[in-house]
Amino acid sequence: MTVVQRASIRKPTLRDAQKAQTRRRILDAARAVFFREGYYGATVDQIVAEAGASRPTFYLHFRDKEVILNELMEHYVARALPYMERLPGPYPSVEQLETWLREVGGFLEQEQAIASVLTEVTAHRRANRPRYGFAAIAAWIAALARRAPAFAAAVRKTSPDVDARARAQLLVIEIAWVGETISMNKERDFVDVAVKMVATSLHEFLTHPRFHGGGSKAGKTLPKRATVKRVGRTARRM
Image (cartoon, rainbow, N blue to C red; front, side, top):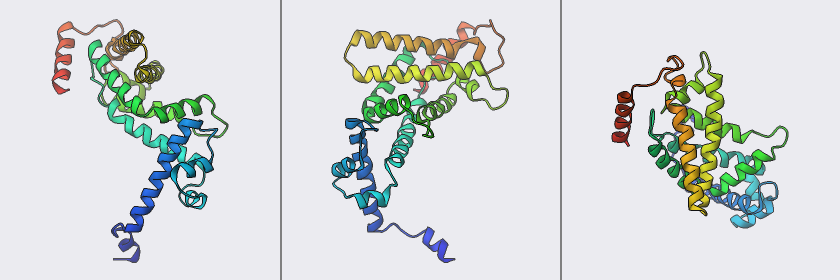
């Protein structure tokens, strides 16, 4: 075994654990500062003060706050994927979609800090900066595609369906919007209407004959019995 191979399989040391803990503390502090001050208003001095660290310690782990933002966004998108993969597909009822949307809203309530930063940097993106909003949309559509043929049509590599891709992107934006609306939870009547509206839009997309496996003819509808059977199987899996 070479020196490189031995180094690659060495057990983590106490020092490794301490470095990881410090890195995590700085990330958590940055999340809090970005939420409180806004990403563009936040400074490294504010982050290290929040973390109880020093500037040299900060720069030991991160080049600048852009690197922190990138890592926080990657973690945020990844944490959302299991929720996207819980879409009650492939042919859910409106009621099933409403329940799912409220679960997504619960996730976004926990992630208010990063969700607000994502909104800020997407609305005020500067030149040569990563397009975090589009990256999140693409990742979430890919996860939804594993649950429903309509979303799968949006990411198909051969014979791409432009209509499906456009609709899918708009729907993910609607999902994020209603999730944030749920997380605010101020006007129950408005929340209920918003959830029903987005669930209905999703249902129309997921059950439209145009997107059934990519091979159905326009105008053809699913037999009522088949739809009920699919929904029944979905309900038993949930």
